[in-house]
Each structure stands twice: as structure tokens, then as C-alpha cells.
Image 1: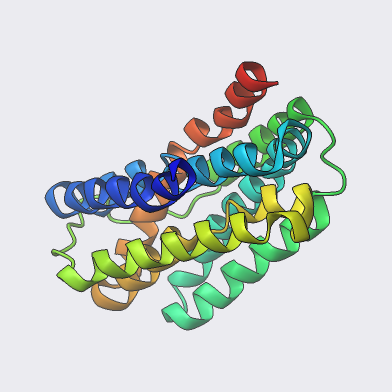
Image 2: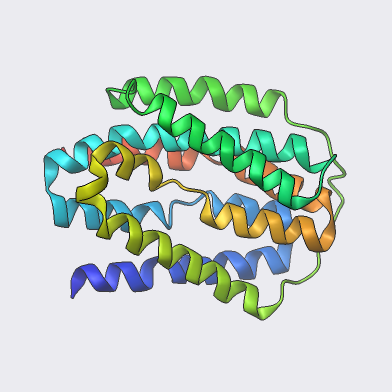
Length: 224
């Protein structure tokens, strides 16, 4: 019952809060709050409860492959968005993410290695981020988009935790960072309001991803 409650209530609560903040303060602020690990947290908690400490430890380390993948997702989408529509942008960004986790997860063998590599990539992404009109203000999202965000997040949580034993700790940890919320919000912003809205959202997210980057370190210290 506890595991089911974690799956069902933690992520949707944060999604509703994030959607409200984006509606009130704009795309960039919405991006800041998307950086909070409200999908990663329930996935890792359930993995810890279901699979045990050794599996959880390996998933925590491998999570950095997914976190670096998110940075490459943001970098790729922000570069493509100014030239292409959202379908091509999301295809390129998702490809960058998947290539990243498949390439890096076997080589990140310790949490400090992952954090160090993530920091280098993060600084490069921020330094090379494309310029955009920061005065841009997006319009309110339709009510059904919030439901789509919640459904997407719950689908990822249930899929990863259900198949964790089959995927193994490396892929489970890396795929826990799959940018499901980022995909929904960036493509909908891009499609409705134009590329500037998506680029602003992703920039706000990128600036505060250090919150998620420290999360595996905290989990490693507290639980292992």
C-alpha cells in the first residue's frame, strides 16, 4: 500500500504545483520548478523498497548517465527549436538522450565520477546556450495538458518500477531520468507559443538542474 501511494500521489502533486507556477510566472519559472526531482524521487524510493540496497546503489550511480542525457536533450532541443518545428526538435533531443545513457551508463562506476562528468557537461551547456528574448511571456496552458503531464509521469513511474528487475540497476537508474515532463512541456510550448517559449522553459530548467544532480549524492550518503 505504501509503494502504491508513493507511485500515485507524489509526482502528481508536484506536477499540479509546477503547472500553476508556470501559468502564473511564465515558461522560464516553470522550467525552474521542473528541475525538482518529483518523478525521480518516487521511482528511486520504490526501487529501494522493492529491489533492496545493492540494486538501489547501482541505480543511483547509473542515474548520472540519465542526468547527463537530460543536459544533452536540452542542448539539442534548444539548438534545433530555432530552426525546426517541434517534431524534428523532439526527435533530435530524444535521440541525444538515448545515445547518452547507452554510451555512458557502463562507464559511470561511482557517484563522484558521475557528478564530476555531469558538472563539466552542465557548465558547457549553460555557456553555449542560445540567446532568446527573456521578456517573452507565454499564455496559460489548457486544463487537459496538466492531465497529460500527470498521466505521462505516472506511466514512466509504473513502467520503470515494474520492470526494474528485468532492466537491471544501470538502465533503471538511467531511464528514471527519461525527460517525460520536459518532452510534454517543451513540445506544447513550442507548438502553441513558438520556439522562444520552449527555449526559455529549457533554459530555466537547465540553470537549476544542480538540484537533481545533488540528489543521488544525498541518497548515496543517507541510505548507503
